Image 1 (cartoon, rainbow, N blue to C red):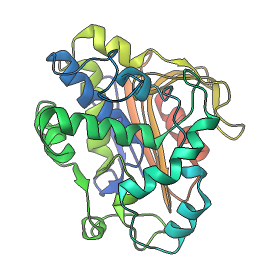
Image 2 (cartoon, helix red, strand yellow):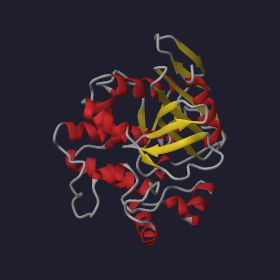
Image 3 (cartoon, rainbow, N blue to C red):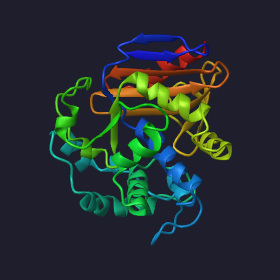
Image 4 (cartoon, rainbow, N blue to C red):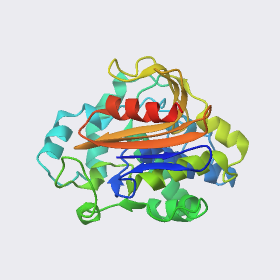
Length: 285
């Protein structure tokens, strides 16, 4: 499944209107939401969060010194057994010992960090993440289809790859679901419109280097900005967007500044390298 928005406004589509899980592409949307609060002086990028030593910027960049719950064998066993998600408090208690192995300031991809961002934004606004995404991101960008999946029933009508049942609360920072068309339109309009002032768009897309993106992934250089994966693809294209994967499927959503193309690919199976390779080929032009 794929969707490509070309520079002239034309489209290339294959299954682009089927609803799918966006997995960690949700992080880009959470980051954009956070930056709307920074824009409105309701949040700070660089002041420490209440009761914490790290800032919103460090959390957005995965440099807050936090590990990820993906390192817990019990987590993988529970997901494989199709159990309900653990309470967030229990999850945080299980990951706490892992943080001692992480150096603050060094890149360490952390879903825990994005859970803390979600809690921070909900606390500031006294609104749910789903409500804030609709009101401050989806509606202003004219994309009304996506939603935050919060129950198993929310996934019943969508393509989940090889997965037959899943509790979306396992994605503790939140799991947005929608079509590939909507995923592309959100990223394209986020980068091309004035929803965010240019200085915050620049902050979002300016990455700090990631030493090793993985040998099976098609990157020459890789970096991570504020909720975005950015760098140079194996074919020489500069890219900005996000890859996501979960049990049974994967997605990649990227913008290509040189060609003004924005593209997304969804594939059944857990092969982030494959979704990236297909997406990067579409964006080369």
